Image 1: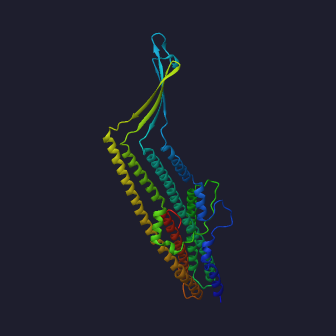
Image 2: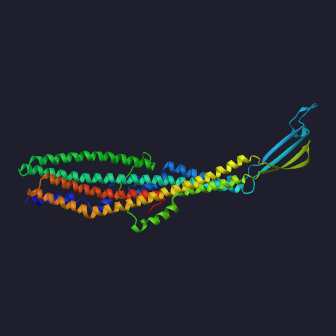
Image 3: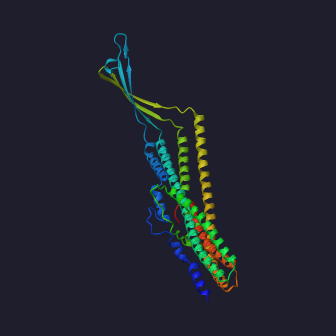
Length: 427
């Protein structure tokens, strides 16, 4: 007759929270400056992170270099005083007091196409700077997603641990009552107390790990001391399986990856630099106009034309070969980045599918089996058919099954973050 109260007690304690509720709410009602969803954290970091803001400013500065790169050099103005010193009057710097004064304005003119090539090189450099900024953001977002998932895991393990601690406290009271009534040995009470103490120690360590993860997450957000973090409430739902096709993801990778975009911009800059190196075989010219002043009136005008003579052919050929090698290096570097991204994509996609299968097995088979095992062990303990060690083993199994379930979900989130880092955008 005493089995019924114990049965109801354990069912209320172990049944716990439904799986859907486990995903929904770990945070309380305390108002926080930054929400407990990873999407909110990403939005906060994109707006406030100082390093990413610096890279955006650098990219904007690089874009502003495009027009000046193709502009003509500033014209030069010169003045020449002739016969400024005479034996009779001595030196004099006034134009109207010297023999004659020559005023010159000159303008350098690069060979045809050089200005356009310089502008194209600057545009490629701006694209590269933008790619670096976007790559930095993808890396930062990846770290935030990974840390958030770990923070969620710690919070969930803490919650499961506290639920189990409450169960162990109830079991301790039950064993103590049975021992007092002469129905159980003292060893059962000691085992229950030992198990509870070990779990309390484990919870202390988990709380420390949780605090460290929260501090790391706050640092990744670039948040100041006045910003507080809400506990993580849920993980992002996975996209449907149709969107996780390897071929489709690889096509998105080639199109959207900022790393590949950066390497492509480097190839463009190297190609234009090579063209400019070949164009340097041709000379630049300078034109000028001069006015000659004698005393207080202008007596004549001169028109000038200058051209540099490209005699240093060995130097130019070396520069051309350098540009060729730099182009080859840029192409190889992009191919290496593409190969690495493809490898990461396929590896993490396989791991994501494996974690999804593990979640399905744990949620549909292992966790229900563990719950039934605990119920049977408790019923057997009440009737004296099993010992208390069997009850503890069943309790450990159900806790492990719950933790395996959340670990599988967190593993999917981690692999999803890896995929988004490889692709360069959200799934």
